[in-house]
Image (cartoon, rainbow, N blue to C red; front, top):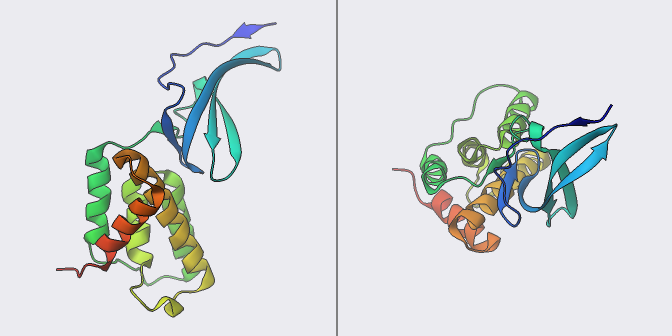
Length: 171
């Protein structure tokens, strides 16, 4: 029983994509592989920073959340979100941490920007717990990596631009 599953490939080799659970990666190959008697078309995504390669079945790419890099308009919305006033709910940290993790793993730049905005502390980082800093840094890393690819700049430059937006006073 050899089933053949083929789906239209919207991703090109060498193109940057976002996988919600891991951030920005580069499509290194689109290949066919025999798995459990079925021939699957796989998108091979390489995450240099994590030294990880992910193989995503073409048929499941959309359902898994794999998407192209955000448009300039979406990125602009995310940066505008950073300029807003922090909205910190008065619930237990464990519940907020879970909500922040879900927003980060959604892969949405605007949701990730909300996490950064809500967890950002100006100079006094002593106010943050270890887990707050971890979540903040993870969100900042995800957004800056996507922003860097979107604007064709280095990740460090993107991070600096995001931090500049955060440190401007809210009007």
